[in-house]
Length: 121
Image (tube, rainbow, N blue to C red; front, side, top):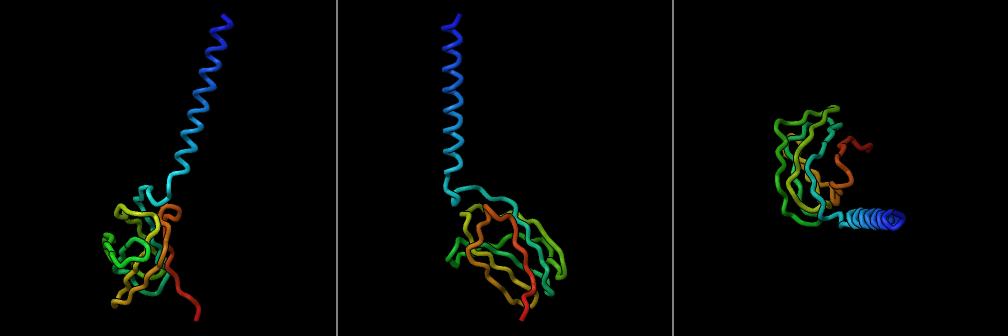
C-alpha cells in the first residue's frame, strides 16, 4: 500500500513539475508572435478620425484597419479588430481634412489601446 502511495506521490510531483515547466515555456514565448485582435482608439482631439492603419514597426507597409464611421472629436472611442501581425507596430491615424500622424513602435500586445489627445503648445 505504501509503495502505491509513493508511486502516486512521485507521479503527482512529476505532473506538477511538467505543468510548471510548460507554463514557464509559454511565458517565454516571444512577444512578437502573439496573436492580437481588438484595439481601442480614444479620440480626445478636436478633429474627427477618418482612418486608421498599422504597419510593422519601422516600415511603410501600412494596412488599413476598418474603422467603420468617422470617430468624432471630443471624447469618443472605437474598438477595432487589428490584422494579424507582429506586436510592435507603427499606427497611422488620419484626421478629417487629410492630416495624418504616425505613432511609432506601439506594442499592441501589451497595450490594447491608443489615446489621442491635444498637446499643449
